[in-house]
Structure formats: C-alpha cells, structure tokens
Image (cartoon, rainbow, N blue to C red; front, side, top):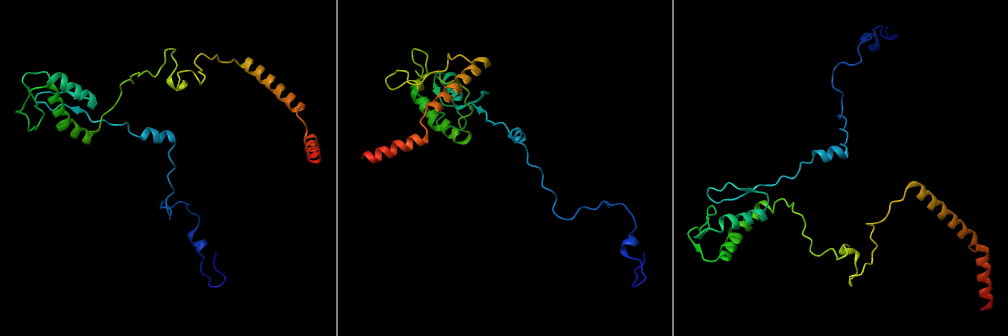
Length: 202
C-alpha cells in the first residue's frame, strides 16, 4: 500500500508475507545451559584412580595396590635372601651387605618407601578394620558403655519392629493420654488467681 505522503510503497507492503525464520542467528546472548541434575554430577565424577605400587627390584614385575602391600612384598620376597643386598633401582647402597634384617628394613623404609609415598600417596585402603577390643564381652560396642564398662546407652539391636496396627493402637492411646493431661491441667484463669492470692498473702 503506498504512503499517502510520498506515494511510495511502505516497508510493510514491500516485504510482503514471507517466512518468519530467515535462518539467521538470533541476536544476543545464547540461552544458558540447564544445570545438571545431582545424578549427572555424581556420574561425571571419575572414580578415584590409584597409582600401582611397582616393585623396583630388577626382574620383579609385582604391581601392588598400596604401600603396606609393597612393604610386605619387599620384606617377604626380597628381604630373605643371602647376602642381604638392596637392589632397588638406582640405590647407591646396592653393594652394601646388611647384617641384620632390621637394618635392611630401615634402609628400604627411609631411602625408598618414604620418598615413594611422597609422590603417590598411601594407595587404596580396603582392609577390614581390626577389632581392637571395641566390643565388650556381651557383644555391645564400646560407645554404648560408660567409663566403668556398664551399658549407659540402650541398644536397638534386639528391638522388635512394630507392625502398622500396633503403631496405630499406641498412637491412639497416646492421643487419649494427652487429651486427659490437657483436661486435667489448670486453666490460665486458675493460675492467675493463685498467683494473685500468693501476692496478697505476702
């Protein structure tokens, strides 16, 4: 439709009906990605990766899971040979013959294992905790017992689980007891009168 002032067609009329989407990008900042769900965050977290503890004795291909196992491996497999030499890779004392096994163990610990742990850590710990007398003779854990050894905290180990009908009956009884308590409790007016009488008597 031409403009009444100029006689030229208007912009609306010149474009005509066309597709609403021209395939160009929308101007402005793109929409924010939705936050991941807790489940997605949990699944993205990588499981901890532990370095294998490699025995560096020549010809030994042992790969152990933690420092304790490596220490035991060295003392059992490599620490019972005669003559007792340290053959750990790049050890300057590899010509020293150790007379006592304790000297050998001390050398391996101080010179090789401690620096090794500084780099890779202790490794994964998956051994069962040793029961160090935490349970008494009656089978109760120590945290339920007082300083004198007597049980001070009740244990729920042998407690029976209520079924729904028993729970409902106990709840009904408790509600009845609470209603009786409220009915027998003195009212606020009686409390005020009693306090006024006490004040007058004094």
